Image (tube, rainbow, N blue to C red; front, side, top):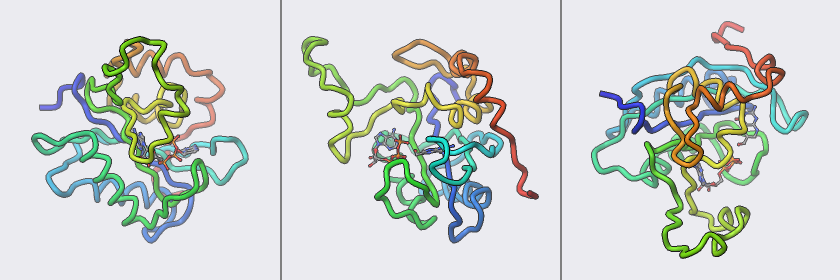
Length: 195
Ligand SMILES: Nc1ncnc2c1ncn2[C@@H]1O[C@H](COP(=O)(O)OP(=O)(O)OP(=O)(O)O)[C@@H](O)[C@H]1O
Ligand SMILES: Nc1nc2c(c(=O)[nH]1)N=C(CO)CN2
């Protein structure tokens, strides 16, 4: 049923207490809440304790990834709307970029889709700078532009989608994971909720 090449993958993170409890409980609850409005969870990673990035900017996070089955005809924006509803149910107020948060759900991949569609830029030299791309509030960027840099994303994503291939770089998740510095991986540990 689930074609890894076409898979829709979502990252979950939390580092503050929410209405559901500690970050591990929030991430578990968010995984359950994703199962609504025609969406279902095809695969879920383990939940990991990860040091806050940037270092020292807040408590450790609980991070995980899920692969979603999406309703027929759903667009990446429909998925993002669904994620924002779940963030709201966990008590997230969207204000603080990279600040501590009760719940953060990011759309990592939507199959081989690349957004924004840069086809309208006739030449590479016409491309806007990355920081300008981020400035439109509703601008959705897929695959998530920082997924290849983040151990706290690639470790859980490698649990569920090691063979997904980045449509721009051509690298699989397993290759991006293997490219991470070893010392980053040592700081990341699976948690089971009893600690
Ligand atoms: N792939 C994506 N997944 C989630 N949000 C995205 C994505 N691309 C663009 N956005 C937009 O980014 C905005 C900021 O999102 P958010 O507050 O979650 O950022 P952040 O988690 O602080 O930083 P980062 O994006 O580096 O994880 C949102 O309004 C959302 O519309
Ligand atoms: N370990 C970790 N650090 C972060 C995370 C996250 O999910 N895990 N999310 C951030 C905002 O996107 C900023 N820093």
